[in-house]
Every structure is written in C-alpha cells, then in structure tokens.
Figure 1 (cartoon, rainbow, N blue to C red):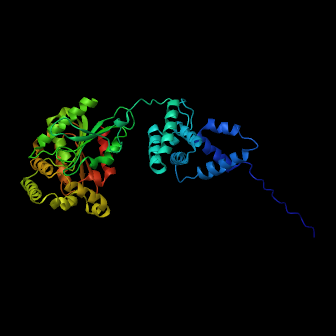
Figure 2 (figure 1 turned 135 degrees about the horizontal axis):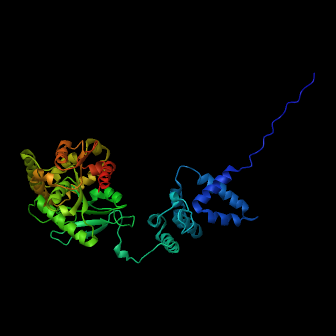
Figure 3 (figure 1 turned 180 degrees about the vertical axis):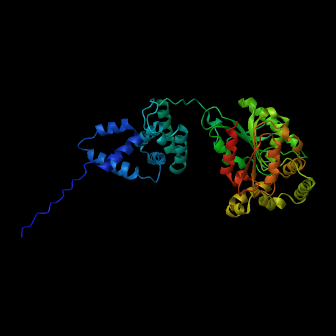
Length: 440
C-alpha cells in the first residue's frame, strides 16, 4: 500500500503589530505628530525597548481602553503629574491639551475632542490644589500661564479681588431703597453674552433656587439672580407691599444693570412670586423685557383663594414660619420627590423658616392681591408659560388661562413636577427655557 503524504499548511505570523500601531495612533492623537516624530527620531539602541514598551503598555493598553474618553484621561494625567511634581511630563501634556495635539497657530490641526480650554485647565489646577496641595497647583499655574502666553493667549491684568466663584456669581447690592442683593454670572465663553437673563425666585426662597439653571445658561449668557425684597440678603422693611411695588423695585434693579452692562431688555424668568412680578413688570415697564417666562404662577385669585392667603398670613403672624413650613414643602414638591430627595426638601424647609417673617408677610400681601387677568393681552413679548402637572398650588388649568390671554404665548407642561418645577425637574425646565431663548 502506497501512502500519499498529507500536505501541511504553513502559517505565517502577521508582521503588522496591531498593539504597537494602535499605541502609536493613540499617542499621536494625544500628544500630536510633532512630538511623536521627535520622540521616534530620538530612539536609539539604549531607549528603543523603552519606547516600544510605553507605546504598547501606556498608549495602547491604557489609553486605548474605551471606559474613559481621551479628554478625561488627559485631565487625570495632568492632575497626577502636577501632584507628583513631574513637571516635564506635566508640561508635555499641558501643551498638548491646549492645542489638542496640534501645531500652535495652525487652524484645524490637532484633535478638538482632546483639547482643554484655559478655563478647563484652571479648573484642573484648582481641584489639584485641594487634593494635592497648593504648592503643586501654584507651580502648575505658573507653567500654564507661561504656555498660554507662548501660544498667543491674552492674559490681561486682573486683581484677585475682582474675581468670583463662577458657580455662584459675583454679589452686589442695588443702590435703591430697599437695597436688593443680586448676583452676576458673566458668560464662561468670554464672548459677548447672547442674552442677559434675570432669574426671579419663589416666595420663601432665594437666589440659590436658581443655581443649576443659572450655571447652565451662563455658558453663553449673562445671568442675574436677585433676592426679592424681604428675602435672602435683600433689605426687609416692615409693612405691606403690592405687586406693582415689587415690579417697580425690579425695574430700578434692571435700570442699574443696564447702566453697568448696557444690557438692554432682558429675558425675565420668574417662578411663582417671580412669575407674578414678571407679569407686572412686562405690563408696567415693557421696555425692560425682551422675553418672559412665567412658571407656576397665576394672574390673580378668586375670593376663596385670597381667603386662603389671608389665613396663611394670620398663621405666620401668630405662630411664625415654622407653622407653615411642612405645608409649604407639600405644595412645593411632589410626593415622589419628597420621598426620594429628603435632604433637598429639608434644606428648603430650613430656607423657608429662616426667611424674614416681615418680608414673607409683605410678599404674601402682594401675592394675595395680585391681579393681571384683565391686562394680560397687553403683554407684547415672546412668552413661555411653564406648569407642573402635579402642581396643586397653580394647576395646569390656571397656567392655561395665562397662555390663552397672552398673545402668542406657549405652554410647557413638566410631567410629575409640583410647584417648584425648576428644582424638581431642572433638566426639563432648562429644555423648556431654551425653546424660548431660541425665539429671542
């Protein structure tokens, strides 16, 4: 029997080194072609193994993992190298961060998705100061300032006394009487503001009610938040007031802001009490308003509604704000929110009971007698009305009445939210507001 040999297949290893090539790709994306070309040209018999090692291990095995985006990994590297004082490596990654790995001055070079703005670099170093120490962040700041100038960024002088936390804005007090406390957040874009937006809070609240929305809008807008008379850090003179007086006080504030910033008409966003002031302001001083948001507010109360407000005022006058705090939380927030966000609700309860009693009662008097129903047809600016479908204090039907009366007004209903929609559903509230800003 003759045996026929079985042919054997020869397997050849693919000479293309995927791990190395992927590492080189990632390294070029993060550090830029110029640096990698220089590094490759400097390889020699002594360091070639190390170059191969870091390209595979660091740039492929770690930088190639999809669990974090490249920009986040860049921030981590900058923080660690600054913390450890590895300043040569820090400067390398900082330069690449500011250019996206591109060539300085060459438009379109580099990778935009890995680039950090000067403000983002500053925030990295502020965070580093807390967790790794001020000396490390101080050196990092000096290196960053030198590189920014080298890359053509203008760094004009600015006194340290003239800065503010961008998360809260710079605080001022108005020149009028009573003086109103207000904060200003300038656009983080460092460009001219797309709009000047004024945020007006609810009865018993203060400027902090708007923190999330204010910081979101301040990406491109100048954002003003103010404490109503008798609230927060504003003056709290005794005696009843009217909604017209609150609107006139707001107008004086807007005039002061216009004189300081040449802001012109503003986008007024008011919730509850702030929405009532906004109606009166748009009617009494229409030249101050470019657009209007009326959230969770009414245009006036019937006799039963006014009687309920009088009862609330009598309770506060006799027993203090503590007596109405729990009921206020029930009106402000839905059952689900009160159950799931107990620390937030507790915080706002503390805010209510710490409000000036005289200021609270004065504002209650203005709300009780508020009435714009017959004049809403005179509002002539783009208007958005926001309601929460779980709001028992100002139900959707009440807000629909405003929409029906104000020419061209639009309604946005936030599902599941009660009275303080901006706090209970901040993302939905912001989305609704942006639909109005797009029209202005």
